[in-house]
Image (cartoon, rainbow, N blue to C red; front, top):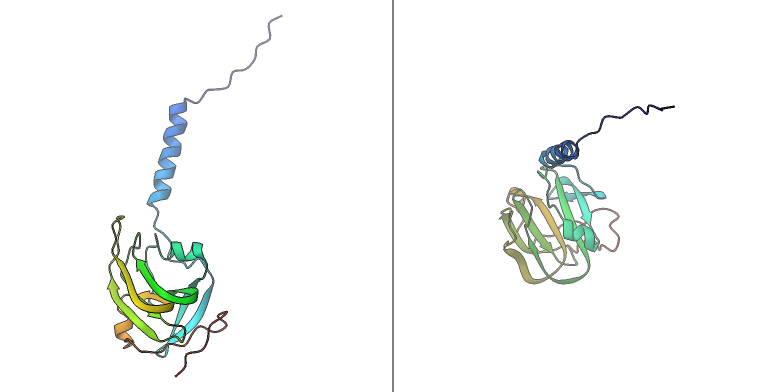
Length: 169
């Protein structure tokens, strides 16, 4: 007695690989959402409220705003460190201009970089200061000028920020 076993159609491997490659390519081409991924806190700067994403650990500080498509006008990223030290930032894989505000432990602006340009390559310039900074605030380009912020300006820290001291006015 012969048993007939139904044969399933065989998908050629090249078809499956082509399909997966196409789907991966489409996924890569999708625009990044401008949504903040970390914990955010409201922060008032010169009378205007910003929602700042906290970058308070090595991984979030390393990632920063890389690969995002934009930073809305009322958003920012606040990098916090446990101590004051000279800090240096670069714009690797950031797709838009930023204002970089370097703040000391008393929330006084010790250095300002306005309109830092994006950098898509690996040879990106660094933006830093010889002055000690404990916090670095990244805001959309032009914000510092619009709010008349300059070296020596004092900024109030976000509410309930662990370890933050209010600015001494």
